[in-house]
Image (cartoon, rainbow, N blue to C red; front, side, top):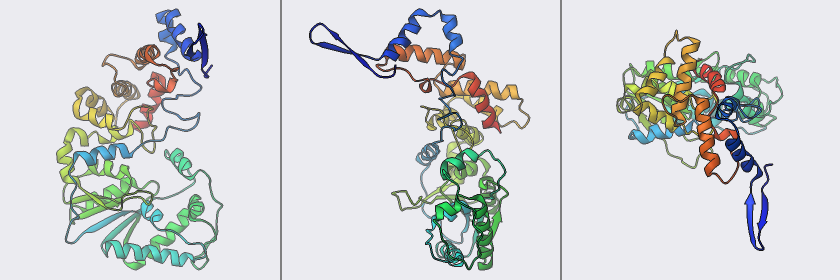
Length: 384
């Protein structure tokens, strides 16, 4: 019923008909209101399409959207001068340099040490992720990025590289052993190295925040999560976030954001709720909400006291499950342009009514707000 049909009226006029849209309009016209309202409490699909791209894969987050909104709201800074302590995201550093097959691992390790010395000088702290085979909340993101897992390689520093870098690093055992070797090489060169047990984002941000109390500090990274964490954790001192363009980016220039000034411009209402603002519409551990841009949550946390009230629940260490579910549903309703008193299932029905009347094509369930049921589990994931 997805394909369109054409009906000829008279001798010349041909009218296109979407059978699925026609069916949806008949459902609206011929179903009792209470029965229809009950139906929209279900997904109308084999999985929650507003949050998932398939039965087992979350919709991937568009994290740069919120970073772009923050960069647009706060004036950029010139490159800081004087003595600077750099804190580097080891994961970004790992992917920064190309590897050439045939070169020894020692040669590759030395190229990283030379790169850090050449670009950042002697005052550098590098923080690496830790990789294990234990499950984590970022497994879905890692699977999407790697797509396939390379074979496990037993290697020494003197051996030549015999496979592509991407394939080598897609295996967590390979990656962890290489990070261990690189950490030792960097430390021998005179740099400080910290190794996280798992994801390093929090440790990277905390390291930069603590360093800024004593030194002019620049955190170098390309991950939106680091910017969000700096805004939330900042305490005092001269701290900058330097956005290093990805290799795939058309931009070759570095941008600097003074975190202290950014916190002043965005204000406490935003920075205290920035983690929820980021996670509710998709990050590495939560799904994107189809059709809702991440800048919407940033605007709401600035403008809506009711949205901030819901966000504050997610800051409570002792928040109950019922509190999280209720606050998550109300926040999601506001993000989907619903009224304060609308439940998500009621909002789904209203949205369906409006779209099926005006649209020229059938309404896919992903274009409706998430159900109360799927938002319940999404909210719990956001909290944790």
